[in-house]
Every structure is written in C-alpha cells, then in structure tokens.
Length: 148
Image 1: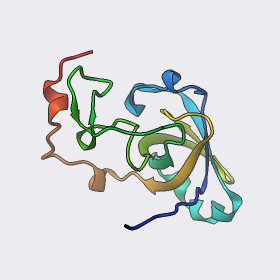
Image 2: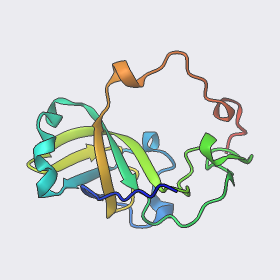
Image 3: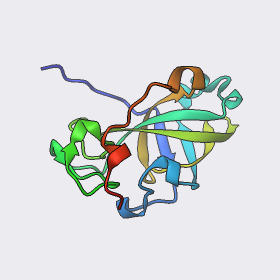
C-alpha cells in the first residue's frame, strides 16, 4: 500500500482553540486568521496578494478516527463519508476557501477562517472562478436535507 508523507509549509492561526468553537463551514465564518508560511516557502507567495480568495489545504490535526457512515453537521440522516465534508476522514485533510486581505512578507491575513489555531498548513492554491465554479453541479443530499 502506498504511504505518503506530507511536510507542512506553515501554520494557520485562528481565534478557535476548541473544535466546538469552529464554524460549521467556512461560508458561515467571518473570523480573521493569520496564515504563517515558513520562511523556506515564502518565495512561493510571489503575486499572491493579487488574488481575492485562496484555498487553504491543511491537516485536521485534532481529528481522531473515522467511520464510513456519518451524520453531517447540517443533516439528521447518515450519509457516506465521501459524500460529506465531515472532518473525521481516513486521510484527515481539510480544504477551505478564504478571502485574502493582506500579505506581509510570509504572513497572510485572511477572512472566513474555520480552522483551529495551530492547524498545520499543507498547501495554498489560487481560487479562480473560471476553474472552480461549475454550472452543472448537483449537491445531492444537501439539497434535500432535513434542516438542523
């Protein structure tokens, strides 16, 4: 079986210190956060300040274990883990789109953060509407869910 080792490129700082403090989803957050990119990766931030939004890819470092059937935060019914955004996963990797407010050297100030303080940052990618928005999307159970 393939084994993958990932090395964090930085750390995410947020006002949230406990899992029950974090917003259910990034779209429900207006919290500010700092994304500290380690100095050896800072050169990769060139031109990032020209973007309004970025993807943060990170490790769910406080997540433990997983099950393949979960009740997502926004529904009362069980669904397959891979049809949800539940944080307890076989490979605990998270993805958030945040608004980039400012860059100062190797630190990014972002809005709409939903991670825990101290979250290991694995990667940053540009959020580009031309590539990331799909008109023909279906949202499955989310569209017909029983509202919480």
